Length: 490
Image 1: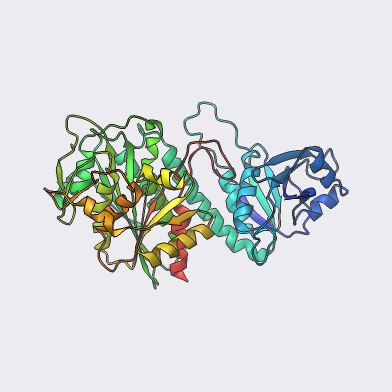
Image 2: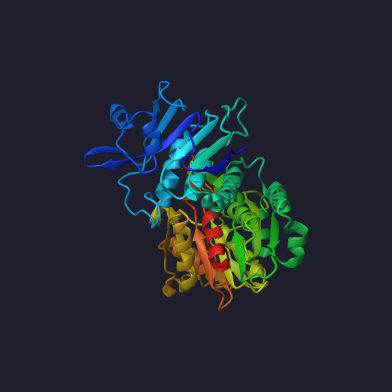
């Protein structure tokens, strides 16, 4: 269970097992960040000298634990770096994303403490979100998991901040649930079980759910989903989740790629297979984002379409040069079975558009080219320019880095097929992320503002933990989607 989070007045006496304070990096050495004054006073003004004695610099992601030796009602001070403190917001001394990262870095090492207090002049919602995400641990498959003692996190701040903390708790829970799904091994998470878990998440919020099995998919003509999934002994699914509040201000459609394991199919991958369980990260993000939007009671109708399949090589697999008839009737020649994500997404986008939404967001771990172009932390965003830029801005403010990318018209010619309407990959390798976006654009109705979020790198952290980001599933795109929905609700 995640810890409870609450806001307490800065003047309230601190009673906790550990107190988190910020440390700034300055040319004159480390300096206590704003918000720690009461903590330093309780220690007789000794905290600055203690920072120097432990070698603190204020560097981001740097954490030092300082015992108080009975001088205060809290036995431990945890100093977390906030850097040079550049770009504060208009109210607080520390910017929101800096605060998230600092709180996350501190809480990563404090799950053995029962009560933690954070004393940092920053938005309480950002601190709460960072703390909860930093305290996350996936232990479902550990025979003897490390004990998680953390029960409460208190944040020094005004009572007016309680609403933003409540929001942070909802969003952090959605991110954590997304991480859980991404981290679940593929022998336990496959289309049928993924659909069951997605339904359970939706049921908790009282949302309408429709699950199409392989027979229903065949009846309705979802050729992309069926083609990709036909090589697996575990048949595909498509899940539809709907949130329809009264007096909605807009209708947002969501689509997420749900490849529960991607071997590449007949075009078998030769490396990096161990993290291909994360190829359903977009679907997991979409499912949990809908649940969060409903929990926040945003006045925005949301319809999510989530295709789920396992891309496996076998005697029944789809092959290069096969032609698939997609949902809606267009035909696609298979140039590469390892470009399967765009095939299931094409089906889902056409189905999602039938609901006549005002906007569409699609999230997927779609291309290795995203990693090559933007690295492992920055989402690639493509689509209708105005909506794309609005989603990028909302996501960036929420703490998820994204970069707007073009969809060059000249790349369209490479998608022509001599035998079908389209081919899923062109004959040349250049611009792979953009080519995938161009392919998806073929299935978006004219006039529908849409954005494709390629989260191939950001969805799964292959390196060590950092700030509030664990190794493994990150929950990428959840915060961006929720923030975009909030922008429509205003």
